[in-house]
Amino acid sequence: MFWFKKPNLDTFLSYLNIICRYGGIGQYEVEMDGRNCTILLHHGLGLNVSKYLGYFFTEAIKAIVGAAAKSETGRNSLVLRFQKP
Image (cartoon, rainbow, N blue to C red; front, side):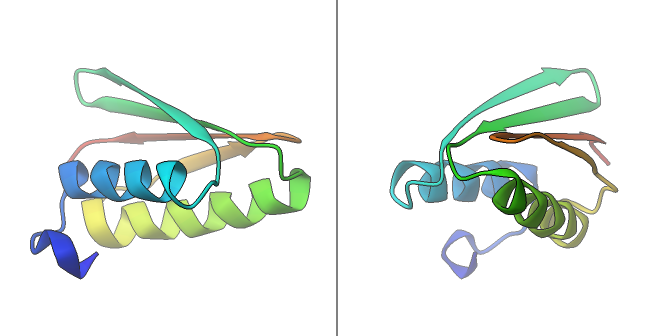
C-alpha cells in the first residue's frame, strides 16, 4: 500500500484491482449507493480461502478506509459491505 501514499477508499480499491488482476485472486465488482459500499469477490479457491479473505479485507478496510466492514463468505465468493466514513 505504500505505493499509493495516502490510505483511503480509492487507494484500497486500486490495491484490490492490482491483487485481483496480477495476483490471480479472482474477479471483483464494486457497487456504491450513497455512503454504502458493497464489494463482491468471485474466485475458485474454496471456502477456507473465502474465510481468510473475509478476515483480511475486513481488517484492511478498518485500517485503510476507517470503516467497519461486514463480510459474507460462500464457497467461491466473498461479499463485503460497509459505509464510507
